[in-house]
Amino acid sequence: MQKLVKRLSVAAIAAAVLALGAQAPAQERLPIFDAHLHYNSEPALLPLDKVLEIFQRNNVRGILSTSRPNIGTHVLMDAKAENLWVVPFIRPYRTRADIQTWFNDPEIFAMVEEEYKRGYYRGVGEFHIYGKAAHGEIAKQLVRFAAERDLYIHAHCDEEALEILYAHDKRAKIIWAHTGFSLSTARVHELMEKYPSLMGELSFRSGIVESSGKLSADWKILFSRFSDRFLLGSDTWIHERWFQYDNIMNGYRGWLAQLPDDQARRIAYSNAERLFGPRRVN
Image (cartoon, rainbow, N blue to C red; front, top):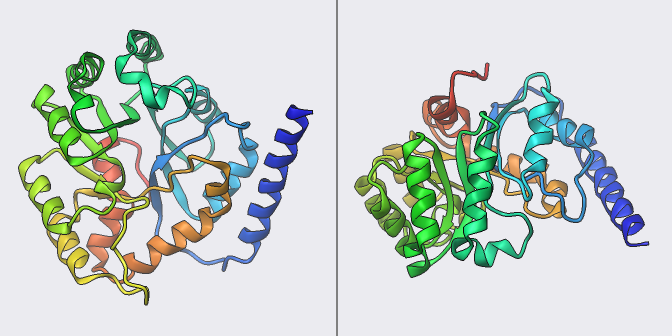
């Protein structure tokens, strides 16, 4: 019975997503690289053909895939879908419970090492860590593991943990999930200056637009200074985010259109090309 409910839930969401997409205007839009994409197995994987349809109609040409467990990323890599560039990251989670404990669990680091043997991963994460927990031995091992292999780190963390992660290895290359959520733009600016390898990913990031939909003045200044340091993301951590996917991407396009074309293109997909090439988005 539980499995039936799960299948019905996935089917209902898939149908709703398709209905929403039918309302979208059929027009050429700025290509987007989704740098925070989860294809999670809880409660069950959304059917792959529906996921690929979502990407196609939103002109999403590339994704940073980080899934719980990593089987979701394996599926996307095996799909070899036309016009979809998949950049795989190792997620240090087997189940949702690992979110709270991974940084104290030696089995997690062993899993990351084993998963890396697949030979195609470009980074590690997304993982959650806050404050002084980032001092833990497993977190330190993970940062050094990534730095030694020129892998990126996708970290969902506060600013204290961010600085601790960098302290573990000066070679670290961090993509900051949600760019601090509600941290002031002045502090984001300081951290961008302090850590030249830091990239900010913008899903769930507050304050970018005003209630009217106008790009905030502070963020417009920040983008003008660091347009080469930001990435977009959907953060499909639950199935409901797939239902919202069209609106998420349209929201990004709304404020990208208020930037100079070169800045908008960098944030939308060119920064991902620079980081993860050689696959290109035309």
